[in-house]
Length: 260
Image (cartoon, rainbow, N blue to C red; front, side, top):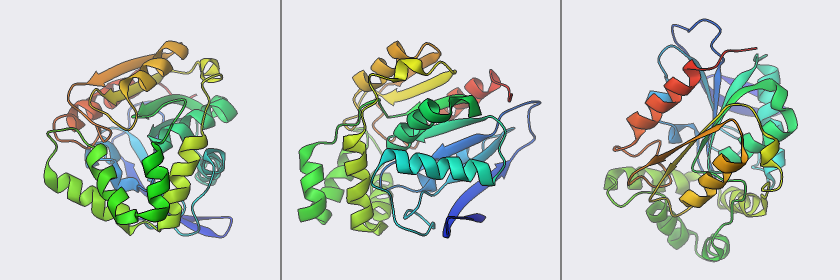
């Protein structure tokens, strides 16, 4: 995987360049709390006919450096990556915490975006108190509960095991800081200012970011379209019953856009 150096930190990413559609904007994918780029399925990381960059945020996956304690700080990392890669107007896709980063980016640097893809996220990312306290007092039990809450009822148990293993590979302090950053994020009063095209995806069995959080975004953002995936949980883009549908929705959405 290629990497770049940002402020002395090595940041890894995966780059896919398909047989590009004319004037198609590149897609940048940002994972959620405690995640890495593998939380995006291959069907999205290697999206046919599009250029895709999937990032490991600092302190996650194969990227170096510490994590960040604020969504805004992660947002600046994404901006620096876009600068370093000299990206034209691009589509920013984010899952959960990554969606908060994408919303913050749109509010700060909306002119640099051709569109947004928001999966399992919201303008306010309230974290259940048992997760916040559990990160400090019972990391094993808390990560086990997270793996359960993050998926729909009928998910493949092996997918849950992979998710849990990856979660436990993250520095516990990075994980705790991610969830504190999510809990502090609140842009409910501001997201109506985001007018660029947006695709919002959520599972109707999502216990981490319930459907109402995506519905709020869809009602506030004039350029948004909402897709609710029946039976899918927080990891809708990875779960077997929904991942191909999500990838197809993303492909169709990108087909409506052009780079500036």
